[in-house]
Length: 130
Image (cartoon, rainbow, N blue to C red; front, side, top):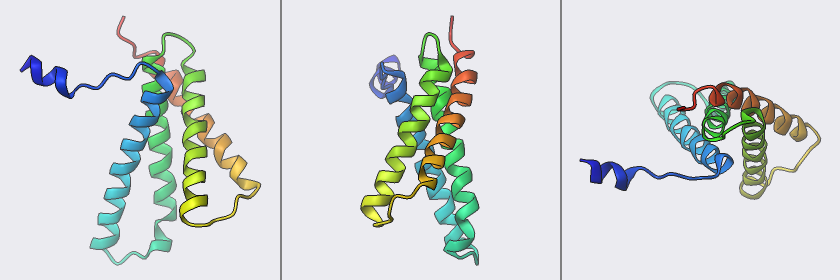
């Protein structure tokens, strides 16, 4: 059993990279749940915009929490970097895949993502195993 645990436990040393991986895994699960909600109910795609922001916010917060937990100190800094990188990656994907232009309010999106990630990192650094 210990061999299986070692095989399936992937440890990433960099706190920001581990937070980004965890954030995108949470975003993937949230997108799957939203697609099931869209498929199983009478909602349209335009009705899901609030839920999409909630999924992104939770993903950023949990990614920042992971980054803060993996960091030795300065969880707010690691979480802030995780949130900012998450915001930039999502904007780049939107720019390349959906051909949406980059606008000035996109900087607000990155700032909000960095703030939410910093909050998650502040909580995560206090959950370290001593």
